[in-house]
Image 1: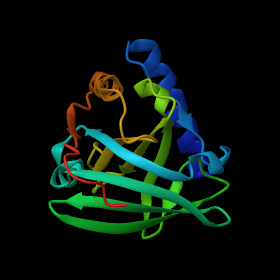
Image 2: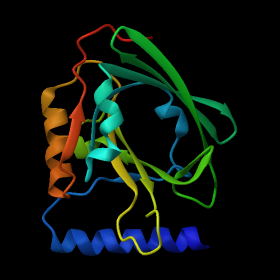
Image 3: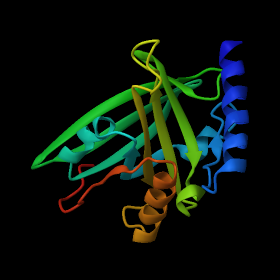
Length: 190
């Protein structure tokens, strides 16, 4: 019930904000209703944005990243990342559960984190997806989320630089001006 009320509040807030602000808003993809099959497979990390450096700092150590989304059980997705750090390849997996009463995914081990999918059209890319991670403030008296970042992923390794530029521009309009793009100078770890 609380989750549904929160979802409605966010929806109404976004409508009010859009009416007052000239910034475009991404289109949320409700994980409980989308066809998960169309998002399975390989995705290349292109950029991350946030309000604060701490949210994206860890990405700066990598040259490139490629992720695979697999469905392992009913309403369970596993995201496996192959990440290039210097000459080393690092592999890590995260498990996400889709629950019928929620519009986001629940990450195993971090149930307090909201994991949202947004349409890549916000970056002017039909073969892209935007993943958002949000964690609530650390203390009840804090007004800022302890984590809030958007990450752009593309189906293709090589995409137009205009896609990343559009993503960064639209994010900056929402005061998410801290960003990182990976150099992609070395071979991908696949």
